[in-house]
Amino acid sequence: MRIGLYFGSFNPIHNGHCIIANHMLAFTTLQQVWFVISPQNPFKPSAGLLNEYDRLHLVKLAIEGTEGLKASDIEFQLSRPSYTIDTLTYLSEKFPRHTFSIIMGSDGYQNIERWKNAAVLLDRYDIYVYERPGFPVTSPFPRTTMVKAPMLDISATHIREMIKSGKDIRFLVPDRVREDIERNGYYQ
Ligand SMILES: Nc1ncnc2c1ncn2[C@@H]1O[C@H](COP(=O)(O)OP(=O)(O)OP(=O)(O)O)[C@@H](O)[C@H]1O
Ligand SMILES: O=C(O)c1ccc[n+]([C@@H]2O[C@H](COP(=O)([O-])O)[C@@H](O)[C@H]2O)c1
Image 1 (tube, rainbow, N blue to C red):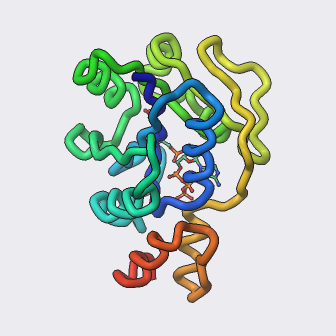
Image 2: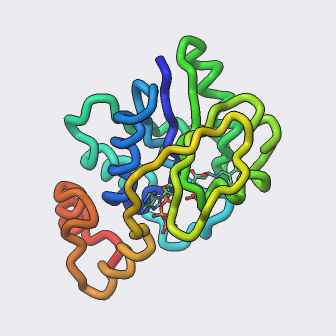
């Protein structure tokens, strides 16, 4: 099976992420998209990061009942911070019948040469990149496919700030996610 891995902190998952995952399923030859929740991104501070199991639960709530979308906790058992090449190597060994590719925004793609073992990553795996506002891609690497996708200029940071200042995050995250965040008092 052809599986697209959508890596992120998902702190929390929001509609921007959901739109992209659904779009990739609809407009590429990928058969499944897995949200891979990274316990700790190598480039981001751990302060303000909700427990990874709670973030995983929010992702599961967001995609519940959607054919082809899955939530993966594979990085929870790997060493931290979460390096994408390590996760891909592990998954490719564990599931030799699947073909894994990476899904990412053009913001992250601009930094990809700074990632661990970037040359190996770029050589071994296909990457589906969608454009984020302000991050044009001028010369993509050979195994990269540019995918035109709807742009929604929101971020998890913005959503966390809204919650902290008592603003309503309705319409920015799926209802089930908002209800769970409110019920548990996350990000306050
Ligand atoms: N609004 C959005 N639309 C599409 N993709 C997004 C959006 N926000 C983030 N992404 C992408 O989703 C992936 C996971 O991102 P991440 O979980 O870090 O979300 P984030 O909203 O950027 O978080 P934060 O604001 O906490 O840095 C990255 O590839 C990132 O480029
Ligand atoms: O492997 C790396 O060196 C590496 C460096 C930076 C980011 N990543 C992964 O990329 C994913 C998305 O990162 P970001 O910064 O766009 O949220 C996240 O899951 C990180 O673990 C991976």
